[in-house]
Length: 476
Ligand SMILES: [Zn+2]
Image (cartoon, rainbow, N blue to C red; front, side):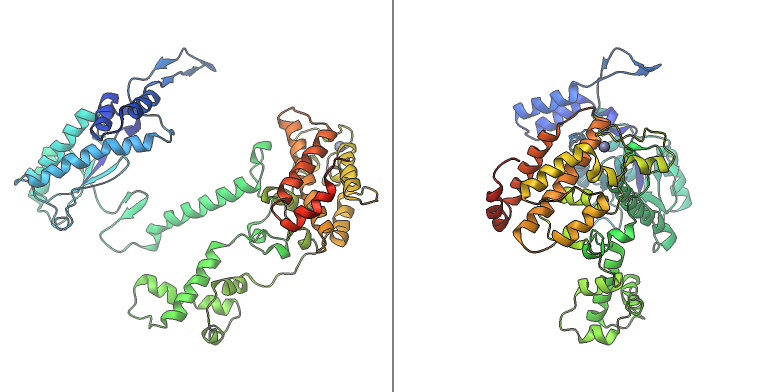
């Protein structure tokens, strides 16, 4: 087996080669011209001492990060795949003994290339000649130092001969291919660990990005809300995000109930599945209870694993809220008081002015923004008036309590109130951010109009609410 490492694969594809391949594949001329234009108009400038030099044109290669590039690259590699197919007719070439049935000579994923053949000098040489030919045509060069060759059941003499003829170094298993260790034996837990770490890292990275305004501060990105809590149901003050790990446990348990097999002779994976029964004990569920269920519900087990959680009183403002998900997310953070308001940022020791971005007078906090601030009080007051509520504007704590008491019912006016609240909080927070980061300003009158329009648009999704909103077909 020969592992070929390609040098700067994207950067070295010859344009004329690419054009030729695309032409041979019968890509329509006009479309081809578009593609080639995209590829060939690239120019680069180098930043020297903070100033860019005059741009110079590229001569070959496809752009890194361009969504088109992977496709073009794969098509270029297709040339190699097809030319290797002709090797099959060559009587001097011998397949790798395990690959003959499947007709496999090469496996490639983007620029990761594996070639297989029998361990004799002629076959290996033939194989490599084909690659060299491809290399000359395409401009894709193998990285001589990183290429390696792997032997299985080849005599020491023969190994030496092959290595001498190719000039590659001898590699040893296991090595990584596409991030997965390749080994002739069963993979150990330690070998798979990097993969697990990567997956967990990806998920964590995503949650941190999703739940924090990392750009705003220079402190280490802090999650706004703990992951565990996000997995709680909405009624308990979470976002009902599925905790995959626990879900998988629940899934395994299902397999176990169905299988009821003996664990001793099962494969590693099946043993894992059978072993998952211990999570039932953890969740205080008797196995008999599961067995007696007519229909096994993964969700039910999942909810049990997650445990019983106390219900929060503001759940009714969040649930049954017809506002858009992004509005609800901001309202959720506002209710938890986890928006990055200036009082919080100062508390973390970040040196910024404490003055509210909307009025410029008072220190900014949740209490002030919703809706004590002159600017937002004006908006909220008009909106309350618009909905027909006669009352004073309160601070955030009191507003939340009022909303729970008067805004959580089933009446259409309550549904409207919930939607107006979530929309107002979202747009006031957006205005606060736009003023801080974009330097733009909208008057409170514009904001009221915007909020009312948005509420009407969303309200149309629910026929009952839409009918109710017809009573509010005006601006205050
Ligand atoms: Zn203010």
